[in-house]
Image (cartoon, rainbow, N blue to C red):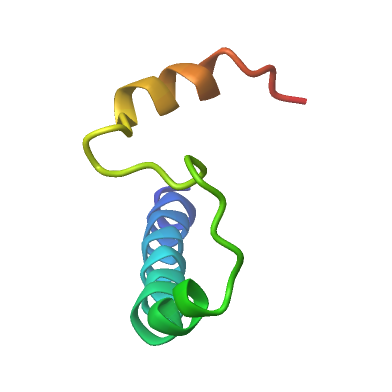
Length: 63
């Protein structure tokens, strides 16, 4: 049971880091230059709040 939980945790971290590397590191400049920019859609770091994101996810029912 512990092996499964540890493998799940490690796999999640690796999957997240791989996605970040691909979409932010390699394709980040290309995507920001070639996608439609909508005013107010992408929030700055000062406008975004991880706490509010977690609260909103907590209030969403899980099916």
